[in-house]
Image 1 (cartoon, rainbow, N blue to C red):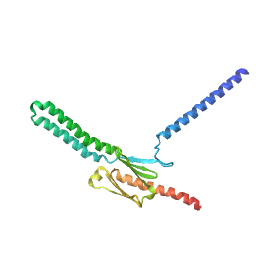
Image 2 (cartoon, helix red, strand yellow):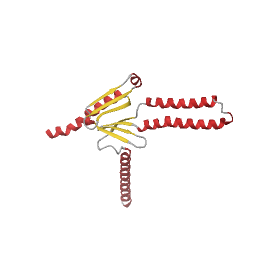
Image 3 (cartoon, rainbow, N blue to C red):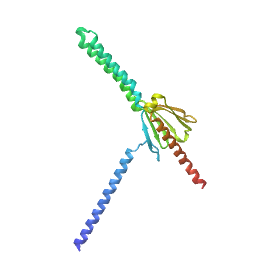
Image 4 (spheres, rainbow, N blue to C red):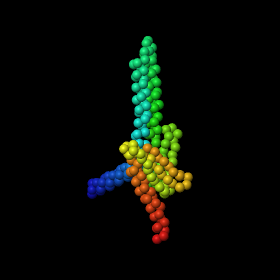
Length: 207
């Protein structure tokens, strides 16, 4: 009897230990989920799409960087520096490095730090490398969304998204937007869903 009773107590202890482990694992998963979630979103708000400007904004910086390197190489091979050739090569190389960094890295950082985010509640614009600037447009305030795309934009799949909202927001022109037609359609859908969400409590009160 004592052996049976001891076995039961041991099995109960094992069950309690398993429940404790599952509870701890559940708390860990919840905490990790909370940490991975964007803390700038309000309760009930979800991120839908985040895009950077179209890659074509980097065409000019890359072309300038290539031109700087080409000019320096031509200068080193064509201009007769004589005995100062090694020193001249170092100076021109330093100039090329600084020129490439200035013409390429700054536009790249500007592209990377510029984001256009669609959530279920807002259109969020974030710009700036060191000093950050942000603008939020509530979807419930948006009155019209249009896009503009030239011939090159249509070939590359980019364009300008024009968002109109009454009041202090006014007209917001978002340039160099990738997949502009798709984002316009998505924005229309999110605006309609947000208006239905806002109107739903009013309908429930009427009922």
